Amino acid sequence: MTLDRANRGQKIEIVSISDSNIRAQAIRLGIFEGCRLTCAEKLPAGPIIVQSHMQEIAIGRNLAKRIGINVI
Image (cartoon, rainbow, N blue to C red; front, side, top):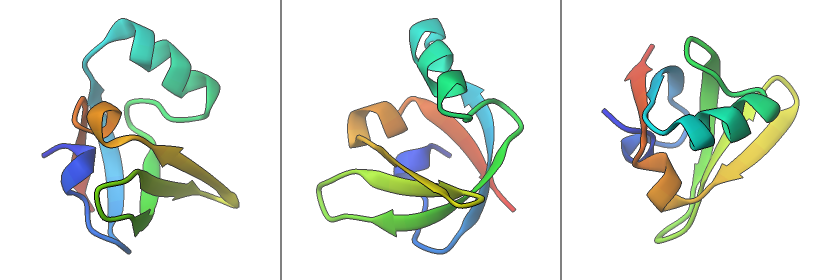
């Protein structure tokens, strides 16, 4: 399953980030393989907003399609 399919309120764990450039950018934002996040919001035809502790990050749909997740 990929991040773009997560639903609002779901707790997720990142299992893979396919592109090494995207992985490097995500690490700078505190998103890495094995980290656990909450899908805070899913805007219609817009970004997915994930929450880690007190930080919220908006991730575009095309980018979210490249991030593999598990729902926990």
